[in-house]
Amino acid sequence: MTSQQLDLAGRVVELAQKAAQDAEVEATVEHDQRALSRFANSAIHQNVAEATTTVRLTMHIDGRTVAASSTLTDPDALDELVSRTVAAARLAPVDPGWPGVCPPTPLGDVAPDDGSVAAADPDRRASIVKAFVEAAGGLTTAGYCQTWVLTTGFANSAGHAVAGTRGEVTMDGIARTSTSDGLARLSAASMSDIDGAVLGARAATKARAAVDPVELPPGRYEVVLEPTAVADILHAMAMFGFDGKAYNEGRSVMEPGKDQFDPSVTIVDDAVSRGMIGLPFDTDGTPKRRILLVDGGRTVTCVFDRRAALKAGVESTGHALRNAMGGGAYAVNIGIEPSAGGATPTEVEGPAADSTVAALVANVGRGVLVTDHWYTRVLDPKTLVMTGLTRNGVWLIENGEVTRPLRNFRFTQSYPQALGPGGVLGIGTTAFALPHAHVASSGRAPALHLASWNFTGGASG
Image (cartoon, rainbow, N blue to C red; front, top):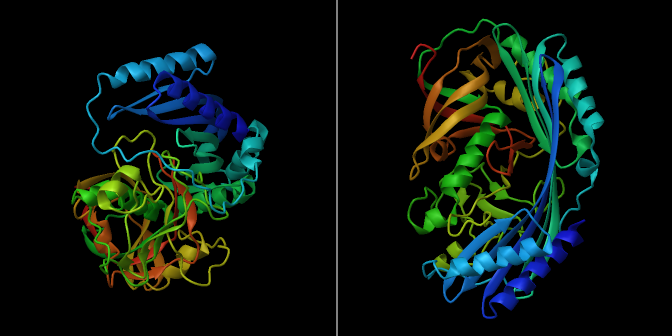
């Protein structure tokens, strides 16, 4: 199907060049297919699906840059898209930061999409939900199973043309007692990698273990953060830390060449290796590759789109956002490398409901196990101090064992500081793909054992 999007993108470029012969032109055609089975009270109550084709056109005319889009693809609609884009250029300000269009550049080795997500129907999603509900063992459950396929074609006036497909399936659910919730969440590039029964059992185990929580005083505690909480750290660092524009403007905490993280920490951005969820190029058409952001604790680089790269005097890393127009770059597939000896995680008894978390808990003298973060907000982008709340299960750890459930905390913590030299006491052996609520990204997060986390408020204030 990618040929349809690529052919249409090429046709739009031709139309734009006829309308403005000296213009530089980029055209992107996205076919976005999403389907969702949502369940509550342990039953599916909503099945929805949508498929939308969007044409995005960017033109640089007489030193001015304009962008427009349309969800209509008939010839008249494409002519109208081009004409209003050209007309808008007369009103646009001069754009001194225009980097030019991407020259013809071949894509590197890309792991193929297996087509299973695109082929999934409501019955397939329902089978995953059913397994989740049954594995919860009578607890009330709620959540969703979603499939999402994005097929994209890109062409520009330099003759560069690329196409690709991004398939993602996500299961996100809770099991609930009368006073507590347990969470299980996972994304994958293939339907075969989502096991509803495993996730349902995990959520139920955590829910039962979270009954009748007690309050622990605010303060700094040793913590084990499950992958669902670590994913929040990664997305914040991608948005506010590794953005090349923020780095150019002195707003980023990242300092390439400095040992900002614990020596055990290696952070990468990878959309092209097997099992990863992502397109092999960005919205500038720049091919993606595996990028080493932090190597053994030392910050190596930030990520750049073509604009930020031009200003920094470096090459684009392939991280432009959709029609960003200078809005910044984003490490869409950021991940912390798991520790050596990674094995398939197994389910275990108790709140640390998989072995990758349980192994870290066993090394804690006294600390806190955190399932998830939510409602996190940045307080200081320069130091990346964040504040937010815990959710879906918090427990006290004593002498390597989970001893009692805790009420939720508010935390105020610099994420890079928590991962700084001496701060990381352990990293899980498996990294999990986890969705982001607002950005089409799938960070890969292992569990982390951290020396200190600043809980600044409890259930009573």
